[in-house]
Amino acid sequence: MIVPGEVAAEEPGAWVPLRGLLSFLDAAEEGIAPLLFHAMGIAEWQWATRHCPRCGGSLESRAAGHELRCTECGKTQFPRTDPAVIMLITDGPSGTPEERCLLGRHPMWPAGRFSTLAGFCEPGETLEDTVRREVQEETGVVVGQVDYFGNQPWPLPASLMLGFTGRAVRAEIVLEDDDVEDARWFSRAEMAEQARSGELVLPGGVSISRSLVEHWYGEALPGSW
Ligand SMILES: [Zn+2]
Image 1 (tube, rainbow, N blue to C red):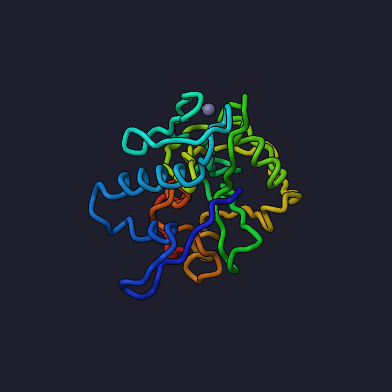
Image 2 (image 1 turned 90 degrees about the horizontal axis):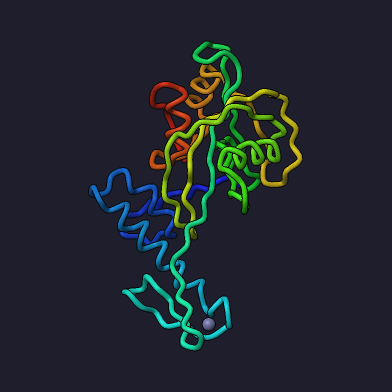
């Protein structure tokens, strides 16, 4: 899985898809983002949850939409959040010009767009193992050390994106996953040069993906989705 971005609407006052709003959050009033994310998550959960999972009975909304109670067996459901990981994998001596980071691209994306890899946590799996499994499935790269970076709510429909950094122990790229059309190692110099020329287009400013890339790079980079 790679988290898709959306292009912001060009015209003021125009309707945009919900995902398109994320592009405006950088400039929005402080405190708006958590409210918006909460509302999006609740609305999506209400829309997608139609019947009781235990008996198939009909549901009534309670607690201002934060609970759905079965009218037949009484089982109460609560909004769920699915953990997903997003990770910047590096290779080579840390902090040197030889150090590189791994980015991939989805086949549906416009030319030049690359992002950090991401994927959902499976039942019984630690987050660190999710990072290692997803990177290997999507790129063939084998990851050793994994460290927590930060997180971002992603209620589209119900994820919490948990950001990690990881170190490759085998850097060879083998592409076998349909979700990833291309994956490449970028040195800081290559990243800067290609971001400036527009050959490489990185994720938008509000995303944890952007934060991971710029934290590794060491400063802000030009251009975004
Ligand atoms: Zn029920």
